[in-house]
Length: 487
Image (cartoon, rainbow, N blue to C red; front, side):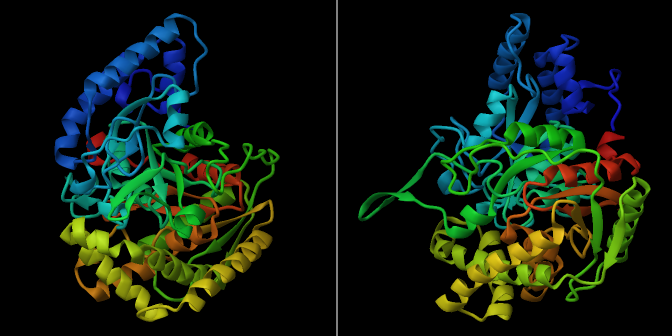
């Protein structure tokens, strides 16, 4: 566990520490927000991680948070603590731009459910985090806000699509960031920047947002999310520590039946004191891991064993390979109707990336998969969910790589169709999980070539506590990885 350091500058301290200090009146929310704003001013011009900053609004919110403390009001778990939100998530008064200039002129009229939950916890919303156009790359570049850099190495991706969130955390701009994940968009950026990212079970954190509308020749119509967004996408937190990620997940857990997959109550916690059994899955037989990736998994397994977990190795787990293949079918076919809009208003990068990515999917499923193949993909998904849940039960988790490669070189998906296909293959740990709807967390495990290398822990449905406990055991036994900006 991280020991609070009262001597540290406020922007360096954890969300858990800051919330406690604000509650005890040792520091004020205004002081914390000012410290983060100064840090943003120092680091963000180069990194371009946060956009649409409104310091006066954030300071006004911090002032109201301080008034609540002085009045002795009941305080939420993140009272007065700065948190960023992502540009593809509705926050009232801010455009849900998706990094697209054509979508940047209409402010959202209300908050997404996860943003409401953060407000109700007392968090001060400080900045919007950058993402790729339409949030469909493992990189975070768009023509509207520019390129987000990785604080560890500017030539490497900070991840995507929550790359602004991960970069800002690693640079110390805020202690917690909101993100979302349908193909690794929380977990991969966290890994690229050496922070923690958790993808909850589908339905635990509400994905509800105020309805969006489009003006068409036939009149104004509501835009409905496709099946994969409903069944595979989640909202969740990124943070610098496991404890902060756990706190943020608790705050964002929002029983909400407006979400078609929402559950009516927060999941019951699993019994405490029982160590999860850990099954190590290093690959699926389709791509070779970078040596540093192999070492990170080995190190994490040893640390879990040292913490008292029973650890076993499994050569391959074919159902994860099959899930990754099904992801390439369902996600891209659901996105296909969006291609005319992307071609009309998207930037060159997203058009090229999607062209190459669709080519990678076509190599697996054919140029235009049939409706029968699509339906069979959904049907097979259900069988794989059952099989994986039976394997995991209530006391087993999986330890896997995050990717077969180190963080990708910037714009690797634009280099060639062949390189784009290599990326899709390398990212099987990121794509297999969303299509099944299971929770997973990424946590730093080692350092190689000046880059953080993380591992992934996958748990059964609603077993977030199991994987967070294991992530904490790894974090406790891993030297703290700090970017050059934080040393």
